[in-house]
Length: 72
Image 1 (cartoon, rainbow, N blue to C red):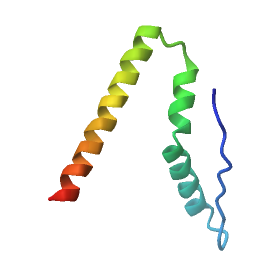
Image 2 (cartoon, rainbow, N blue to C red; image 1 turned 120 degrees about the vertical axis):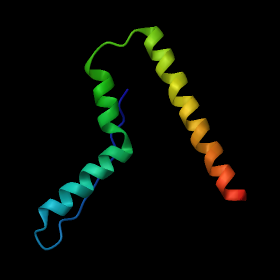
Image 3 (cartoon, one colour; image 1 turned 180 degrees about the horizontal axis):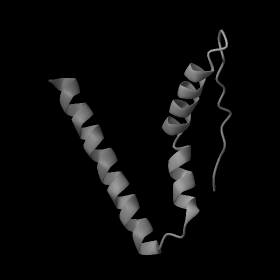
Image 4 (cartoon, one colour; image 1 turned 30 degrees about the vertical axis):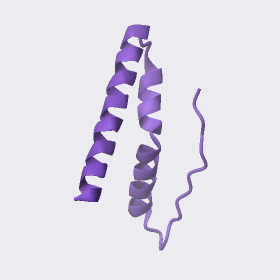
């Protein structure tokens, strides 16, 4: 299920290039590109589980690094 958020970018002084960069960055941070890529083709249940495990391990590694640098 894909949940859509309202993503808004203001164009200041007709600077469309900058607005497009900001929009792309917001969409990327939201994870929309990644979700669309995953929905493009079928993912086997075993691949789904492996991907979820890899993502969880990555989140744990990042959290551990943040904790390590916070206290040093």
